[in-house]
Length: 250
Ligand code: GEK
Image 1 (cartoon, rainbow, N blue to C red):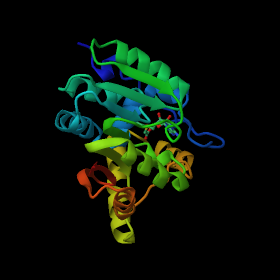
Image 2 (cartoon, protein in one colour):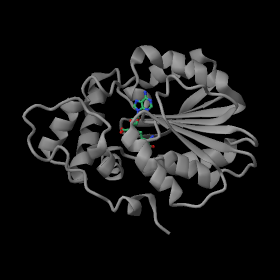
Image 3 (cartoon, rainbow, N blue to C red):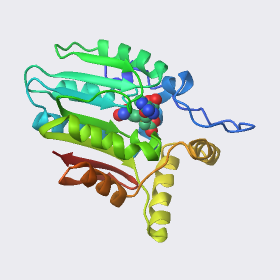
Image 4 (cartoon, helix red, strand yellow):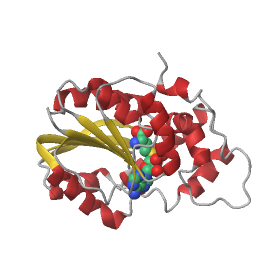
């Protein structure tokens, strides 16, 4: 059977391999879509483990006759793992991304596998769509791209749209208040990227392109936001360096 990676034939991310005269703000366009699985796996430590964990949490928390959301779905990796692990009847998945190029390619991935569980792919802004009758909501590395002023409201709407016992799984790049810890862990992440074949030029150009585009929060800011939204139980279930995944239970 084809895997998520085979389908994209592991096209290598070389977007920042050559010097750019001016590095523009990062965009999820055709060039990124073409190399996305390679890019995310070489840049985000623990990405595969998080996908496996999303599958396990789906087994535990998906409820019969409910909706599961994948907000900022990119190529639909989280939707695929949720779809494989749903064990209850009457579930459907709603996967949303505001990049038309991502949604187009996600459709190809999702149709390459047979399943009776419907996945509705929508090209839309995740801050604008209704969330209702939800048992599992996944935001895998996307809240960090949402305007910080809109984050509290979005998490509140997710809380309201969840059924009792439903969960939000939120994965994010985080930063640390303590500067020594921040430096040490950031260094480890840079080493991870170097070990995965990224050059100094690629690392520095990518960093410039993400400035003011990816705005991270601290662990405490995330937990406070989740608690303020109404989640009494919220904590980290996985962390690799400065990448963490939170579980919040309604
Ligand atoms: C994965 N979850 O592989 N509304 C909808 N989508 C958005 C918005 C928005 N307002 N802003 C950004 N995006 C995926 C990985 S990638 C993470 C998610 C990364 C989308 C954007 O188009 C992109 O596809 C995705 O969020 C972020 O599990 O590249 O680091």
